[in-house]
Image (cartoon, rainbow, N blue to C red):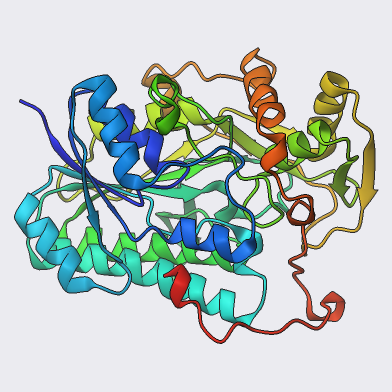
Length: 405
């Protein structure tokens, strides 16, 4: 018997290929999305490099090539609690995958309006979902896509465990008491702050309402296509290259194919965790297949395959493309150099053999960047969001972000 799963934010970069993958595995999938990512792309004048079909065209293409149907509901889960609650009540999902959050750190730091929007959207979306599950007394397993960025990037090289840190506390009586606490967070942007706050919401609802929750702390995603998105041109996944939404890898690739030097922030000594988009969808499926029991603590899993320094990543792409590398001022407030070691023991134990950047699949991403290079807006590539007021030029604050909600 197939299982019923809701994919919140299923029109986005990670949500879309996940919805297709789960459909392939036999899940009955319903996407819930407000299509805000499309509106934000228009706001930034930075549409996906790959041409993205309308949501109805995407879904029709999937039915055509797979014989399976994915349903779609347009609901703003951050603002329409009643609509979300009614959908959960009616569909009675076995599981819910939660991608319905504004995902870009630079976008969250553009100005006051974007900080407010990111907190309002992300925290309301998560709390509305949890409140609905609690009110309905639903036993649906919630899988949330978090980020390794909750831990910050100023570490001293200690391996980051999967969510929890075992400590001992010395009491007034001199005795030591063992405790398991959330690994300390050190968010580096408003976006990462919302993911840190999500963790506390999950802890409360798991304890108070016995919700079954898995929180996936993911590294930077690279790659574009999955087995499912390759099956029809209308299924192609997003390729974001702009300074706000484009990951560092996509930004470098776009600069390389357009003949622009690769702009490395600061010394390039920032170490980041990476994972391929194909492994993202596999990890979500593995998480769904191994849910926590009712009453268990929140299950936190690190979803990362490898780590690289940004300058090493730039050198890798420069070697493959012949591009030059330029060091530029870092718009972020972060350590110039950092180490990062991440435990990914859970997914390794579940059989994940991750794709690494050195594998040939990097060439596919280069091919996509070259194929659609004529669609890119060169003015959108540089990172312009600044972290500190002292370095921020004058910028008009949008009167509202209704179009992006």
